[in-house]
Image (cartoon, rainbow over all chains, first blue to last red; front, top):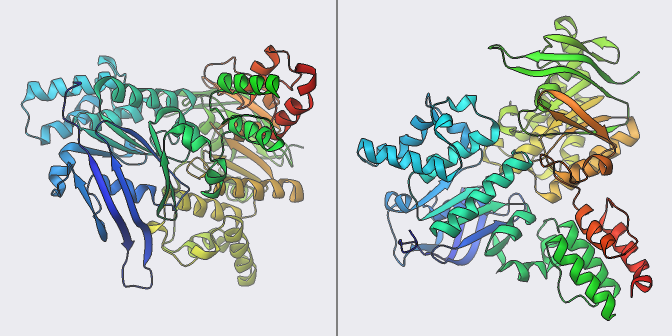
Length: 284
Length: 273
């Protein structure tokens, strides 16, 4: 799988206005330049109404820019061609589960691609394995699963399309502590082991910083900053201005830096943060 | 008398799934309680029993001493408001302010009083500027605030937020929780937060842990969310505090706020160096 083709998505000065020319005209995105490298794990963060979901929907051509353009491997593509390569998991995707069994539900997409029965069965088995659901889950009704299992079953339906890039809108919303961890781990594994690109929309900075290669900060439809987690962690002021939470561990370090402690930059991980604090105290 | 008291509460869903088995629970006037635990542990079932969205199959719930039963339901729901996790399920009118006015509109209030409550609830949830907008065109987080505004306009004695802030970004969540906290202090609102968010639980007076349909543990946040239970998130700063303490620093074991821990580290720096 490592050598598989992965799509590169390029957004050039993408703007999106809802209801243009009416009194309700709303600017959802304004001049966003962003390039997603093949196989990248990107987190899109911002507060409600910052344009995260709108941006996500441009990646699989559910929305088209009202100005600017989106390219897939350098080309403009029709929506159906994009959606074979880029999958989108909406918020609360399990609300769309409908079939009698989990396996049937996961099979729905691949069957629509015109695959043979054995190919469909193979896709279903692989997709369920990727989300950590087994044979015993496959035969059950989606409604007999726990909340976390139901979410993973819905994600299996998305993964069964074998996308090169999977875009997820708040995939951990409403899940419990364990369920959140399971979903994030499966995305990280998918990205690491199979090279599938991941775009994660979240407002939880912890999730973004811990799992993504790169974090893109959105505010009022504009891209404020895109950088690796260390770069973003060094700008707690910017997070706050975007209406985002500074993780408490980072906040402690920020306060210490403000008091004059010689910490180069804050760490997200508690153990690393403690080490940096202790070292700075020894020096200072 | 507690605002809400549940005694030996059981609930079996049609089909035989036992969601609750013998839970005792209470919520006092002016108290903030966080109800935590894995999905499927019975948190939402308990929350829904407290305002009569479900009626118990065993035991009882009393609101201000009045037993929750079909005859008292209308009254109970005016006292106990419930906001669930999916805001789209709670929307009843196309336009934001109409949706907010729907609940108080059924309370026999004067039009001016309804207007006052709607304006207040919209301001408290940061929706004033969106009052005339269509709900279906709002973002998920904005819709969640619409659902909250509808509950606040009822001015309930008890408010149950069942994962209702999960879709909010930190700024909106902070705004809403600050408003609720003010109501807790000023008019004794009893607030039940069903949550997976450790920061939200950390700010509660009391944390109740549910597992497999039972309330298995309760106490102050620092005692309950100590990182020993793999089903529960640790308090956000507990791990950092533990690492610092192991290195010999004198810091609180479960600081609630970053400032508290930073001050302890800064204050103890000479002793360490």
